[in-house]
Length: 255
Image (cartoon, rainbow, N blue to C red; front, side, top):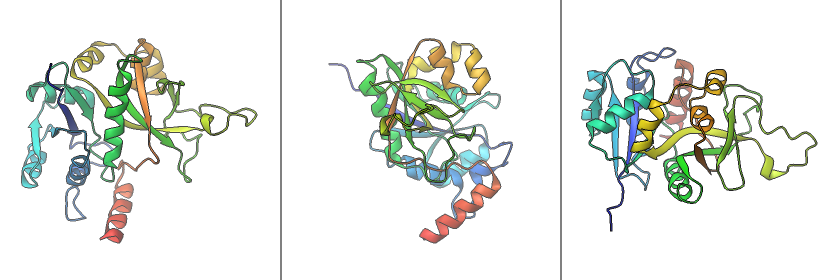
């Protein structure tokens, strides 16, 4: 019997964020942002290893200070997926090992979301041919379905993605769809086999990916399947200084 695959979480942590430079090291809570993400992610029961992938020695030093494993990657990666591919090579992962892409700016991440992404891959790759597992949640009370910054996803009856869009999908024309046709918010976490990561990076961007500016559409438009698990609620990422200040206030209220 072959050994069970390793399930390794990678947190890409680029210091040069455009909208909020240096955000992963912002530390008004007493901890750098990346530490909050790491501590949340390591509570996921599915992960056998968790690694920060960064292009900056300052992030490496911060990771070392709070006891996280980190690897130093190149500085010219176009996106986090490309950075994770290099990190997976540096960590010696095999083609069958499972890689989980954990965003480095989500300090309030529920670790159950990581487990749901892994489960959606492992439970659907044999029965439905899924090559990626991801997660969705119902819209929150403050969310607007028409907001293009909220990515929506529709699933088939087996739990695989039919389409992702910035538009409101599905459109329940006569309000007859019920709960099973409710709008679902995509949560940007992905689990995939190390081998498929190489396949993905060898693909060229597709027309739908360019139109919607959603990388996962490259996978669907090339005929691959993505499993989508459901969780009760989404969580907030940090893109701007204002969003970080709101997180600091929430953190203080819980302390």
